[in-house]
Amino acid sequence: DSFVVKEAYSAIRTNLLFTQQGENCPIYVITSPTANNGKSINSINLAVSFAQMGKKALLIDGDMRNPTIHRMFNIPVKNGLSEILAGLTDNITVSKTDIENLSILTAGKIPPNPSELLSSDRMDKLLSFVKQHYDCVFIDTPPANLVTDPTAFAAKATGYILIIKSGVTDIQSTRKTV
Picture 1 (cartoon, rainbow, N blue to C red):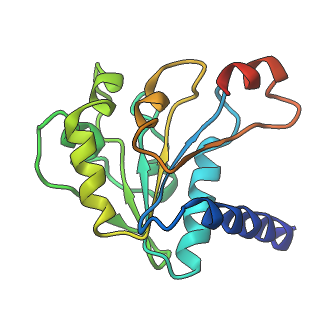
Picture 2: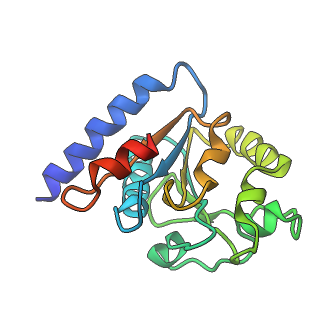
């Protein structure tokens, strides 16, 4: 039932609003213990939920190993996150979506060194820049138990959102991630 799903995201949104501690633009990092837990679709739905309440939301596809957000919105990957962080472009190409208040920054072309790029000074500068233009930022990252990419945001994020799929994600993997 779509009403039940929408209400569930509204409840999560309300809880997240309580965690932002007065920040003008909270940054939420979305990850999961393992692949196929639904983190990208949850990233999208959380960003949409904030956009629908009138917040200018930016969804960054920080999964430069297996990017999917651009496909779900049918957006070209030109001048995405990898190109910005590698210094290949100073153009931050953010795509508007059909959903009012929701913009997307794609992952860009798959680089050989995603962890280093996400930990770079350029990432810090990018987040400082986008915080001046948006009300909230969501970053979809790879599964935490597979690569270290999500940990690059530990000092930069308001919080992490851990996506766990019932009947798929085991307790041991979840404990290891936490």
